[in-house]
Image (tube, rainbow, N blue to C red):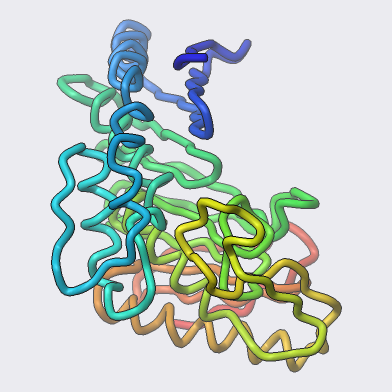
Length: 293
């Protein structure tokens, strides 16, 4: 099956090809929105095909030699992951965010759109024109989805992407976070950073089960690294310790300018690493969100 395009009853655009599943929405004059959607559909046509051509290199851990990748999405992936090359990371850590960024760029070309998003399985690229804003919901547990927090993003903020990682998600994780949501300059940057912060939400505990990544998925880019497959009930102090380990990593990335803010959740507890400027994050469910500036 090749790439498909469809419209939801509410007008949103749905693009799907293999593992790539995008939900897209734009606001503006109807003619501008329709042309933007057409540009997105056109650009989507060979996204997966071109990516697959470079999969072996994209699944190779980064070293001190910058990877020579040809495709524009692959290049986005490498650029987003490059700051983390001292740790184990492959460009695949930023694949979902990079696809979202690429489609957003294509649909915005020469278009007059007030605001838009491209949502690739929770990794989201954003367009916010002057004086526009979007309020986004944050989900702690994809196995029991609910809006646990809300964050208001405004055009003046340096945030045009967000991404979520954790052991419960579609990606494999070295850590035990239910979810780590990162806000950054673009979706690719958020994707890579969310992976690293989620890996850092970690402790050693008998209730945690890990297995080599390749035993769960033969083509995993994590090879024999132990990824989390189950997390039993942890004490409140264990949860706090794991979350604080993740927060330290998030603050390091924030100080390096790689992350604007991060939200970390584990078994009903959550910590938010916020900038000194006013990013508003509000509880929307029963989870108590403690905020760290």
